[in-house]
Image (cartoon, rainbow over all chains, first blue to last red; front, side, top):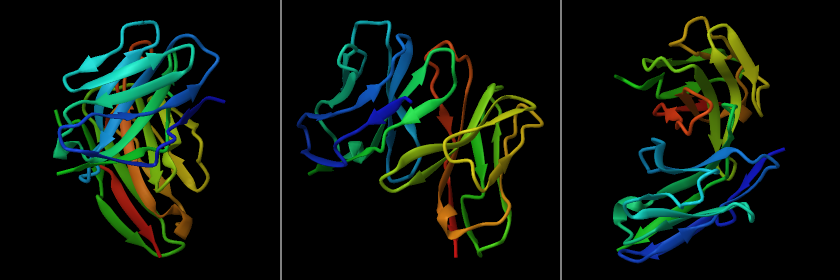
Length: 114
Length: 114
């Protein structure tokens, strides 16, 4: 069975600094998609960034970037220049190509300190 | 477009009562799903549907029923509520399983069973 593991339940970072959230996954498939979702205190789930497994280049979205290591089955999220509005729960998610079933990790609660 | 609309946002039930959480999307998405979010557990898939008339069980289906009579609507029914069903419930939808299309989430429904 596929699993997604987020080993850091809670993290904190000073405003303007950089933080990395880790995510590992387990699959025997070669085609899949990976996602990071953010859940602020409003509870709304918001997509942060996505990565297609067949693309070797790491995805970036403004201050957010990933370090995708396919062989190691690792998909970490780096947040640069952290802002107070980045305070949220972050979920890593996985989906095989050709299916709709998403598997989520247990989340990392990130607090950005002023 | 309203996106994914969930109602109600909050509900308190007594053990044994029944209720339906409503979910509607106006994006013509094929896939709709229900998740529950519990502390330390992440998001767990309850039921999902890949089109009108087609539903299937996810990871934690017991105690819940679903139906998909139209593309737009995917209600989640609790037939006899139990305290273990106290949770935050999210409806989510997407389309095209072969591309990295993201899940679009509703705002969530917080259910408390006394």
